[in-house]
Amino acid sequence: MKKKTGIVTKIYFGLIFLFLYIPIGIMIFMSFNSGKNTTVWKGFSFKWYGELFKNKELMNALGNTLIIAVLASIFATILGTAAAIGIHNFKGKSRAVIQNVSNLPIISPDIVMGVSLMLLFSFVGVLFNFQMGFVTVLISHICFCVPFVVLNVMPRLRRMDQSVYDAALDLGCNQWQAFYKVVLHELMPGIFSGMLMSFTYSMDDVVITHFTRGARFNNLSTKIFEMLRKQVLPTVNALSALLFLAIIIILVLINVYERRAEKRNSGR
Image 1 (cartoon, rainbow, N blue to C red):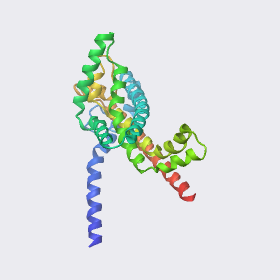
Image 2: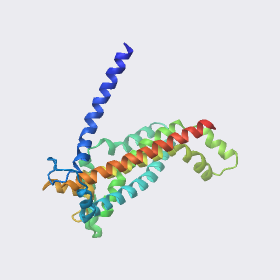
Image 3: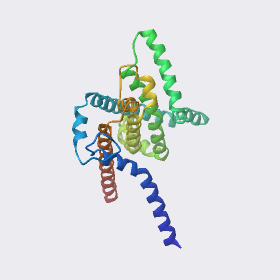
Image 4: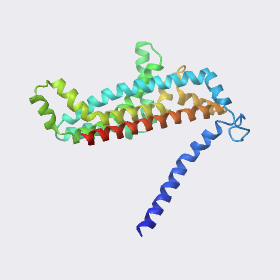
């Protein structure tokens, strides 16, 4: 009975993974198509990978996307970690209320946040005479990334033993040294996962960026969205394939690092 259940479970998960990854596999396969048509195979070629690096608009959009994602994830990680520690130090019902309020940007639709930020930036732009662009997109990405960092750091705070921090103070550390050597060390897995999630969501966002980017600024998602109105060139398949490969490499490196860290800790 257990063997049958195990086989059914494997088949079920196999079908799910096929459903998720077959479209990505087709996209990667068609990125090597020598023809311009994205659905008809004309032959194997690296032509579109060469064309990708010659396309200045796509390269500029990719550069803007990476810069925004890196800066947004760094600032969101700092602010989100500080917010999580502050929320954890609250007592009683106020902690639950503040935590629920911090989760609202995650629950609310992207279009609501995009429109509200657009109205805010338009109002401030009239007062101080500036236009929406790089700065407004960066601020909006930080705003919707902070709750994800809080969401990842809070469980680590709940599991952390407060007596370890008190012991560090008793052994001669000042408050900053105890925070840096004990608290920050305990929270690092949550901080790292929150930063990675922030980077991913910033790279992926379309709706909020569309409302806050202004007329001249483009990142990769909005640029591809504009291209969909005309024609999807095979260079987009090549770019998506390279991004997918980069994500796979990052995930493999993270898993290898975590396994080595677990072995070191178990050895100690």
